[in-house]
Image (cartoon, rainbow, N blue to C red):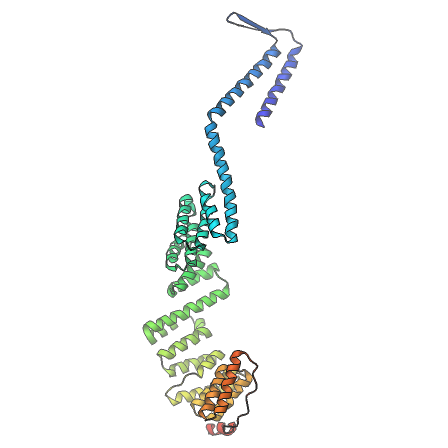
Length: 420
């Protein structure tokens, strides 16, 4: 287009010059080796321009001929690039459709001629991953790194993610820890690192990572809370297995006050303490925590253990009866009272509270306690009835009302006698 404009401009200039010279007298004489050429100035100007452009055209043809191998090579390269781009698009579509083998062929074969080989090799690695071809996957990722060294972080992050997908957590963790030194605040990296550490049960490392996870909001808030609880409970378990009572208490004291009053953590701590500590210690801690904040789960736990010391059982009964004044409609508290009265061998009071617990909320554990109580008192029919009720509850059947007791003494005298 530019050449056409230049040529047109020159012709216009020549035309103007010719018009200017048309009405003027004079001639142009050229002598060369005995030859003489006489012409008008306007014709000479036009001939000069035509000769100039003719010469330029010949030079252009000569250069095109000389450069034809290079031009042909460039044309072939452009054709290959265009075809590679087409295969990239088709390969990505095939990959999305789930035809892994075809997608791998399309993406890998055309990568060498593409302007963006990184996308080809990453896509081919993904296709090989879905075919469980780890060797080919790693080879494609290596080629991607060779073609695009600047994309090293993305390539290695992709490799770690794919290794996690094939449960190669230790290999993935090695890569992720290296990448963490480069970009410690990368959200995707932190998420993959969390998954690897959790699976490998490296709880201490995960505990150190938690502040950064919260800062970068790597997970939703509820997931972070759940993760923190998981880490702390697992660390409590590990310390107990390694060092017993002393290590457990030391780890517990490292927690913040807010964490020590978390119902989930406290429940886990008490269950561990019951295996390595004294019943009296557990009773004291449980009683104080329930007084601090009411928890149905902790109240239920309060009635599941006993001590050889009668004073502990008496303390448990006194505490549970005090709570009853504020939580009359607690099924868990009535279950706990029923269990404590069974240990005290006050059968009527035990049955009363267990049946009251069922009235508030039927529960499998309550049916079991009542069945065992009936069995202890030689009432096998009633015991069988409560076992059947438990099975029906577990199956989700509609629960009939428990039968009126005909086998134990009335409850009121039992309670009054116990209080005396």
